[in-house]
Figure 1 (cartoon, one colour):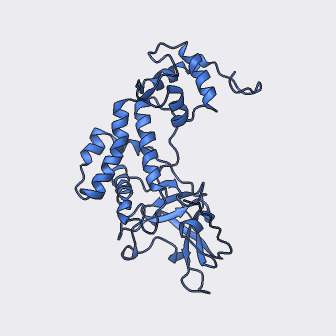
Figure 2 (cartoon, helix red, strand yellow):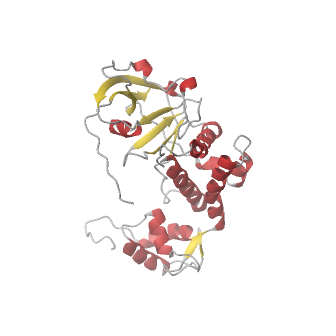
Figure 3 (tube, helix red, strand yellow):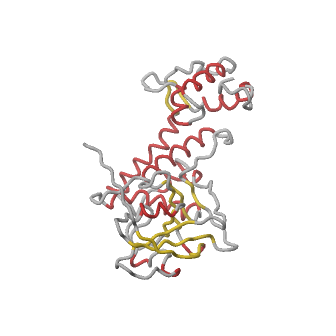
Amino acid sequence: MYCGHPKSHQIDIAELLDFFVELIDIFEEDKSSEFTLSQILQNDWNLFSSQNIAHSILLDAYSLMPNDLKNPDTTVTYLQEIEDCVSYWEVLKHELKWERRFLINLDTISFDYGWDRFFEAQTGLSDKTILYRARIHHKEGASVYSINEMGSPPAKYSTNGRANPEGISFLYLCKEWTTTLYETRVTYLDELSIGKFSLKKNETIKLVDFTSYGSPFLEQDKIEYAKSRFLKKKISLDLSKPVRRYDSQIEYIPTQFICEFIKYITGAHGIIFESSVHKNGVNYVIFADDKLECLEVNKYQVDLVEIKATLL
């Protein structure tokens, strides 16, 4: 027993040996690595409740399994094909920003690394789910925006965003209405309209979720799962990276590209990613807003803005 709770459901570790054997096969011994096998499994995969538990379970598992990596204290790295696939995101970002962006080599992405496969796992959206969008009023006492004014902006007014380039309009929504306050960068006494959106009746939608990576226990091909998991994590960090007022809009280009890749190569209708400005907030980007409808709009005024700073 590892968890310490006698009434909890227990499973014989022998039943998990096949899983561990497959998982260990995605690593190779590397004496120059900073991380041991048990550390990297806990830090990157979060399979266990603590590092000590991870070490104990792996020790018992390795005593039963036929594998070259018997010791959880062995320093390891991921197989080179995993490293190459995931690290290509940094190569692509540099190329898109500083070398070329309109004639990118899609063969490398799709055929050499198989990125299109990693975005085929898509989630739906229930018509009971409510999402939110806010628009700040530019004049005190202005009337609440109408339902028809709460959709994505006309293309000619669309500016660069984390997911869309200038001139191409996407609908940005939030899972919680409070997240819209952070995403619109409201200030004290601002007035704004917040619309409630839901999926239209009889419509379906497919979204690539950058907040969830599935379960390694359910995936048969652990190498492909590892590539998908860590590539999505890297892209998610860039999608969620806060943009400062003095940052160049060039920083948007890689995530704009990946959204366009997802839209046209996989046929998805949007993406889900973590908010960069509201802890635990979740954002939705819908590539075309004709599948959703605004149900109602309410007007709010910002009563409090709290700002914290760190001494540098």
